[in-house]
Length: 539
Image (tube, rainbow, N blue to C red; front, side, top):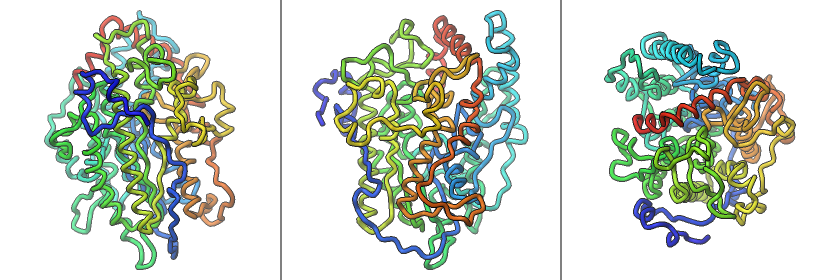
């Protein structure tokens, strides 16, 4: 690969730390989850906990701006395909459906109230409706039933929490979250209607039951270790452990359109929120600690996921056309509702081409470290596997690669080229892609793999990830059963995408007003730069 440091502007060189190896071409994905290293696993009995997961929003089941439909998280879909109905996971039933703000539920409520289109004459009424809607959600979680601690004795199998990075996974527990809420000055704010400390409230539902025999609160890694210890001398407590964490060590740069590289205090949860991208040396230091804890968990098989290139998600829309023919980058990245002709770099939040390249290059280094960890474990005889989620997203990237063959990397065909969607998804019209989700009176017109927040998958998007994990699980010799939990399934296990399509309401019953809502947001942003003001206020 060719180093592009010399071609970067001097200002960008000063911003990008020296340990970030900025490269011309994206890291080549690993196609063999075993890395070509055979491992012989002694299998005695069936572990009590067939599936345990540790991760962030993707594994938690976040979608369209909220955590709500956790029964359709990818761990839950895997458990269903395994015929294992004992998977324990948190739930978030509430007014507005979840935390912090379910955009799909909001769109449907606006549609019910105002029809498929909100006219500007109805704008004041819509704002008042929105405030009342958000107030009910805030009251439920801050002062109502949602503010009560969940009562649950057993540790959850899905130990993932949206928004958490490597350090949170290492150090955060339910008692820390409870203390944060108790010490906060939460009040019924007329203007600030998003639920205060929503991440801590969501985390408590995941981890409040994760305690040792002395009721001491446990981190996700410590909780998994307790589950792993619930085996016998010969049989592990966990059959498959999935660890998919690290995206939030870079995602902040996209959410805020602001690149702040980690520095002193990167490992301190009280101060590190100011950083939006972790330097590779800091990521590795944190990863090494996570890996050390995973090694102590009694799991028969471990699957570790790579970090996706966060610059691909449609929340960050590439402006205009690529910088040059054959480039994977656009000159700027901004919010999806800002049209090319309206974009102003002096006004709108954005990332530059050089910033996006530096972020991707750092993530490529993260993934080399993750790959090395799996390689070392397999060399030692541990049955660890690499889940190539970064390569999966690359092969689904519509504007970056699929619509621009000249930008495809040299390894494109070698790793399989464009990801082939399941027949059930290819039969949909339009065929789902990675563009920003838009629907109108005539149904979905664009996107389909990402939900309404432009960051997290739709249910069918989670299904694609599920299918790739199941392939690895079958490679590891894990058995899958029918719904009765006893009749073994044979052959290649295929995710039931027909069922997922029916369960994915964005696909089966898309809101009819999204295009109209985006038009209104775009018009307001054009006149008042609301998005830029909000991003500056909240970061």
